[in-house]
Every structure is written in C-alpha cells, then in structure tokens.
Image (tube, rainbow, N blue to C red; front, side, top):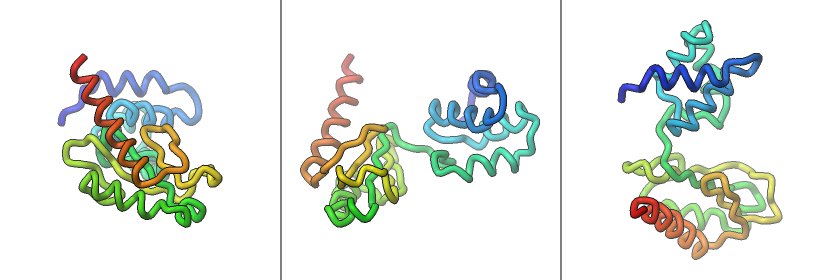
Length: 161
C-alpha cells in the first residue's frame, strides 16, 4: 500500500516541536493508520534528520507502537494475577474462539485485534477487558460475548448511515 507522503509529512509536522517530537509524530501516524507502516518510519527519519535505526528503535521500544496492522477494534484482556484468578483465561479463550484468532493477532478483515496485557492497574474491577480504550470490568464470558456483539452492531449501524 503506497502511503500519501504529504499526509505523513503533515502528521509529522503537526507534532514536530521540541523534545519527544519523534514519539508524538509516531503516535499521530499510528492513530491514523492503526500501526506504523515501514514507509512512515522512513519518512519520519528523513523529516527529523535522524538515522532510520534510531526511529525504528523508538518504534520498537514502546509497547504502545505496532509495526503490524491492527484491527479497527482492539480488545485487550488483562492477565494480571487478580484478573487471572477471577477468570480472565476463560474470557480470553472465548474471545479467541469467537473471533477465530489467537492473542496477539488481527483478524484477516482487520476488524479485530486481540491482545493480552499483564496488568491494567484496576485489579478491584477484574477481570477487565479494554475495548477500543474503554475499560469494562467484572467481565464474564457472557458479558464478553455481548461486548463483541455491541461492537459489531455499532459497526453495522455506521455502514447504514
């Protein structure tokens, strides 16, 4: 997929002011494309006047960045101790079955990405699933199924509008 160079430069230039600009620019690019395409790393390297290896090092150092395309909906299942003992493995298994993928993967149609995280810092609410940045606590297998249905329904409503 050829990326629009002007658009990438625009995203970079919006964030290019002071220290941390590379991180902010990569965040903007990932927000737009749901991952960091290799071409975008090259353009960032050129725009910032940095070696590509340095930009790549930033992109691979932070877990928030992805070099692989992610789905429109990102589901993260907390596997921390509190969530684990409260049933997060069953929730993860249900999501893997329902979506037809393993944790760490994205569906072929790029609708869903399923990830595990070690701890979300909200142990009292466990087990927790984060769907597109929104925390859902005290999850069960049936609540997980309802969550997926809600995401699919919302997507279908957008298509009909």
